[in-house]
Image (cartoon, rainbow, N blue to C red):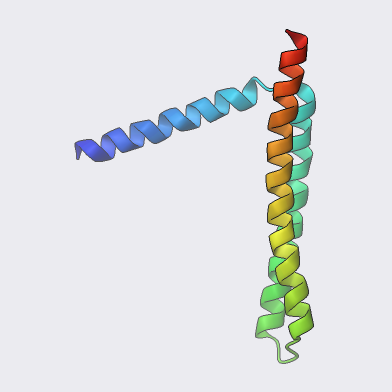
Length: 98
């Protein structure tokens, strides 16, 4: 019981730390995250729907499957790149302002 409570409190403290770090970000990196996240998640959702539609249809196309799989993985990579870039830009902006 105790370990579950400690684990839960540790997770909560990590989430609070991440939340405070995001709230303390400069405006430009916040805007990068604000606009890039929905765009990449939309592309990911569309690609996933197309992938499932291709798998369940009678007109299965291996080329279309490859295209949708590539689109899914690339949208995940682009989201990760935007998150990393916004964090790096925030660090650079804060160091220059000091």
